[in-house]
Length: 202
Image (cartoon, rainbow, N blue to C red; front, side, top):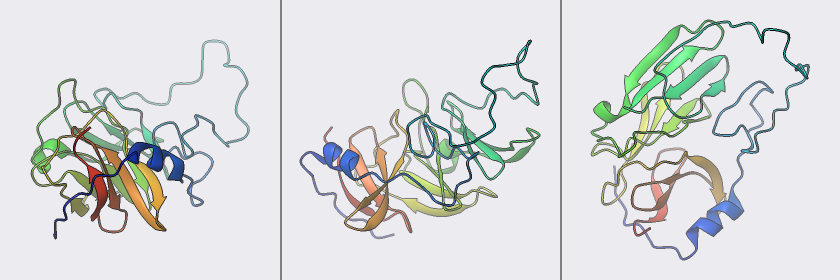
């Protein structure tokens, strides 16, 4: 992969916030593809929900432990959760059965951060976007169905992960994934992970 030098952008955080377009027309009302939901506003468009729990609470369908500290992302009947030690698990959301699992720190040469990996993965266009912050990949896109690697993105200076979740943005008509790292912020092209801009001085 060709590595480019990151360009420092003044006020890049404000620029990114102003340009974020996180909606995805292909998501169903029940999908929750990223931290705080499809539009990052903690609002669900699903209808027919109860306005109060029944006595004794809702029926428990299944339980799982060790799935991580981030929020779970749920898309197309699958639940994705990243654990504090880098274990990324995809479960069937109806049964809790594990569909696939891998450790992103081990697989991509990462070392854990002080309080443990805690991002909520982003699921977009059949890909799971996460940040191992490793020597073999700073940001990675995995196939949402089987966990295979779609692309890797190597950021200059090889920053570790941070305590933030990736978001979708369109900058200059290019769809990107914007990721905070241990050193700063970067935007990578959604199609292939090519770093487009960023800075390592935050």
